[in-house]
Amino acid sequence: MAITVLVLWVMTAAAGVALLSTGNAARRLAAGPVRTASGPARSAAVPLTDDGKPPPVPRTRVTVPPGEHPLLEFSHPALALAGLAFWFVFVLIHYRPLAWISFGILVVTLGAGLGWLAANALATRRRQDAARAFPPRLIVLHGLAGSVAIALTVLTALSASHA
Image (cartoon, rainbow, N blue to C red; front, side, top):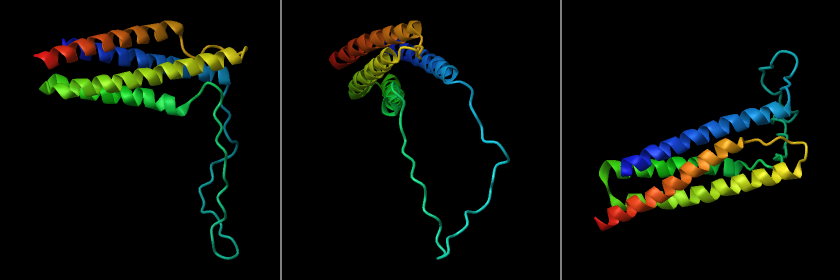
């Protein structure tokens, strides 16, 4: 059963990768063409000021458009990979605490994914002219595969604990 869960996690990850790639493609399409700087690229040293120091570094303020949350966009896939790694090691050596660690990581991953989904849906609802960034069918597929993976992870961890 542990190998079945591992295969299901890999399928969930594949659906997540497809979801990310189509969502990013839709976002790029909605943003329009990318503009590049005109003229050749400069590759020269920055001239020093009169007192021999480099000029002050310009500070830019980074703003994130509504619906894009870099922490959620990084943490959901990163946590999923960490949980998958713990489960893979559990499948190899059957050390019971690894199953529960991977389950805990999976629950946190689920929370990050649901937060990302809610934030994206809220941002889409606020911008009337914006198209949905992620295809709903892939969201449902990824969510259902993740739900079944959680259920089977719990069952496998419980059976491993009682064996």
